[in-house]
Image (cartoon, rainbow, N blue to C red; front, side, top):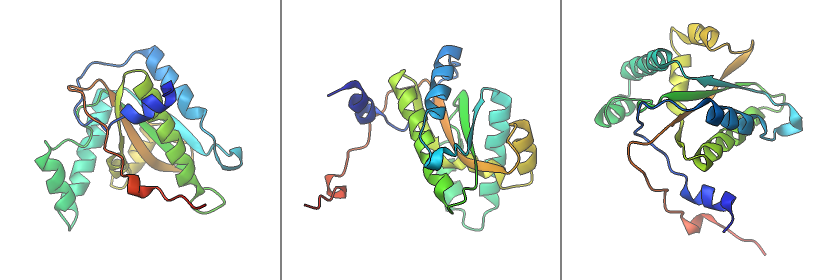
Length: 187
């Protein structure tokens, strides 16, 4: 098996990070991998925002938890509270993928997914644990949405697509077991 396939096979979603900061060299390599992602018609409708400011990350997490706590359906909030009450699992770095709407409705989400997977696989290849974090979008849905967009230097007209948490794992996890029934071959 080649190195790319090994990286894909060993990647797992980490939900427990140490507070050890990541090196500039590694973060630069991950950011470069992100912007090397392909996009429909090469529109590159994304902005890769690397957040190392721990206090800002915690503010965004607190805002997300506040929004979850105010939802009529409390199941997500209760789920997170049962897992320790942390949306970002103490990760020392958060990459936010800001995206702009594409002319072909919804195409920006496909491009966002490709960039996010490049980030996750690049991080894994460098020995950095990671997890895609849809909860990162919560901070951009409440009263502080515009403030966070400003502080994170979102380009005009962009919205939060997804977050990817990066750091060193407190313990090594295992990748999910692939469900072979999810493959259909038409001959």
